[in-house]
Length: 200
Length: 130
Image 1 (cartoon, each protein chain N blue to C red):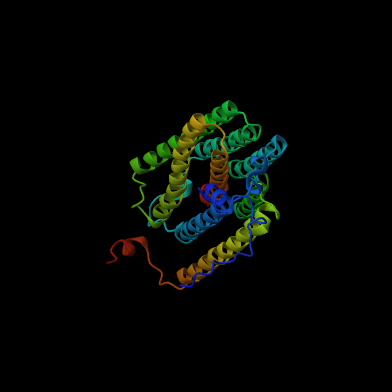
Image 2: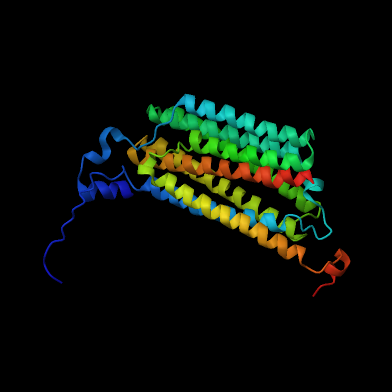
């Protein structure tokens, strides 16, 4: 060990504001790969009914449409929360976050209702390869939304306790990326799984 | 956490001028994105539920709608463009998209041919497989 102090030629002045947002984006990309694998699984197994029910027998499109609407609405209400954040309005942020959370919970309860209904009809994940891959893909998305809701409530507490500090703003931006990303995944789910499942 | 660390490490005021976190949303952007995504969602549902087109054509059309809607969400909701994080976000997305494309098309292609070359088997026999 020599005693020479290290010299840094990079003084950090050209860095982006912080690495968190890029890092979080990279996390989302890796999450995207998880979903891609599950989509590939579903693409391969989605027609293997094992003489059981198919998507056309099971899927209830009005429920799926309602779920899609809930998720879309939650995206724009989260957007309103972000606009409130930019203007420094704590109450608007908290209000819109609460609305977003309610839409998220509505989505989750409808999805759980759908799952319970399928399992009750004997179309649970163990019935066929199609249903295994269906429950894994849609369930993983639902799990993400669940954690998004928990995160959202946590942030509401933090914002109400500490206000719109720099750290809280950064967290809000991260959750906004997470939330909108889940919406993008849902586009794939409702198109590829539900709509195309009903087609045949 | 990392921002706090950055501040302590560099002691630069440049890191938090105007408390700017590099995020700029507008009401107009969100409204446009929302309206576009409502239209892009409603049409596929209408096509499928109303059985407007033959099934094979509907499949292609709704996949195209999904692709466009994903782009709309990326641009208007995730605020992605070539300038975010000096272009690194877009580069990461393009890399991921390439991987996803190879993986999806490869899996579907390979497994389709596997299935096509399998011995034909009726469900009755399948059920009594070991």
